[in-house]
Image (cartoon, rainbow, N blue to C red; front, side, top):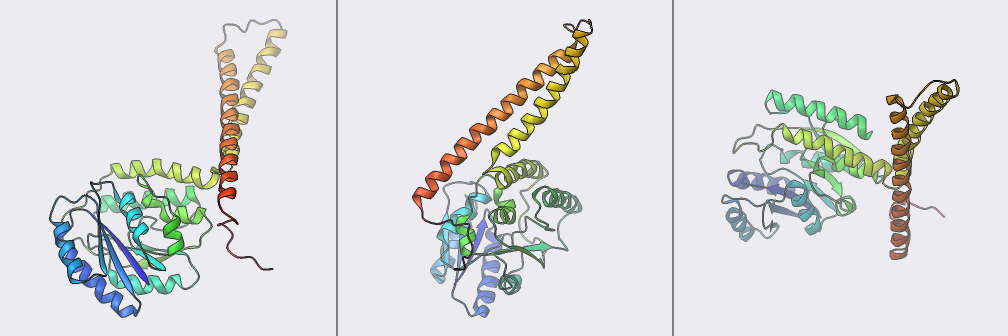
Length: 312
C-alpha cells in the first residue's frame, strides 16, 4: 500500500487539480493507495474543498490541525496516520510533479530506504535559487550527506523510516539527514519542478537563517547524541590546555622576577581553564543522561532497532 502525505495551508485553488493528478498516477501503479492531506490551519476554503473530495473518494483522508503548527508538525501528523508500506510526501502548492512518483518508487526498490527529489531546474526566483544552493551546499558539508537538494518536498521512504522520525520545529528540511543518522540508505533523483500557478510562497530569506540553526541541532543530534563527551569534553580539553599553557608561561615570568598581576593574560588564562572545566563537566553530565536513557530503552524493548540484519 502507498501512502501519500500532502501538507497544505491556504492552497484551495491547487487542491482539486493536484489531487486529480495524484489519483491518476497512483491508479497506474496498480497498488492500493491513500492520500493523507494535512490541513495546517488554513484560513481559506481548503478544508471545505478537502471535505468534499473525501466524500467523493474515501482513499483521500483529511487531517485538520487546530491551528498553523508548521510543516514539520503537519508531516508528523500525516506520518502517524499513514498505513502504507511506502510513504511519499509532496507539497500542496502544485509545483511538485506527481508524475515523478513511479520513478521515485523504482529508485526506492534499488535498495534505498529514502529517496528525495532534486529540483535540478527549479522554477523559482533567482534569489531563492541562490539561497537554496548555498543552504544545500553548507548542509551537505556539515552533515556529510551529499545531496543537491535536501529540502525537496517530493520524497519516498519506507514506512519504518517515516514512523521513526521525530519532527518538530522546522526539522522537516532535514529528513534525509535524520534518516542517514539512523543508518538508513538515502538516495537522490532529479525530478521535474513546475511553476507555481496559484497563491504565493510564504517562505522568505529568514527561513534560511532558521535552517542553519536547525542544521546545528541536526548535526549535534546525529553525531554526538550518544557521545556528548566527545564534543563538550573535546572543547573543554582544548580550552583548558590553552589556559594551562598561558598560566605556565606567566608562572615562568613570575619566577623570573616579573610582575604578572596587572597582565590581562592572567585573566584570560584563568578564564580558559574555568570554561574548559565547565565544558568537560557538561560532557560528563551529558554522558550520564545518555547512559541512563539507553538503559531505560534496553529495559523497555528487546533487541536493538538499529540492527538491520543478523546472520547466525
